[in-house]
Amino acid sequence: MGEGHPQQESWDINLNLTDAGVPKASIQAGYAAEFNKNSKKEYHLQKGVTVIFFNSEKEPSTILKAQEAVVHDNLDIEARGNITITTDNTTTIKTESIKRTAKDRMIRSHDYVTITRPGETLAGYGFESDQALKKYRIFRASGESN
Figure: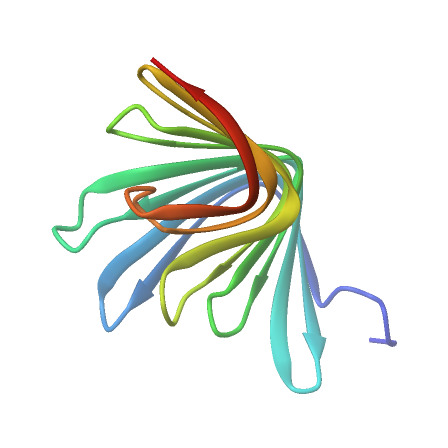
């Protein structure tokens, strides 16, 4: 196929990402297109994307929702559009774009972000967090705490 054309297209997909048989993430999307770029695969996801990340005990720990995302060959994930990230410890992050790197399991953004926890709301531009949203920092922050 020509440059810019998908190798495959799928609708209403469920994609499971594993490393040596260990579940890392489960992805659902309304549409997926597989591209080969420089001998590497990319999956372009659209029409509502949900990514469920698993912790080291193989249990769901973090849920990311976005309008669209790209999953790279190395399992890095970039997401855009109305992003909400939630965890089982009631932390919620909202922003417009993120990148989750598989190597260090960190989530990062340069955009405006709000982080809400019971009794606390922080906001600012740019952040990074571990995948479980337990350790995070906002680079240019403001906020309220009760």
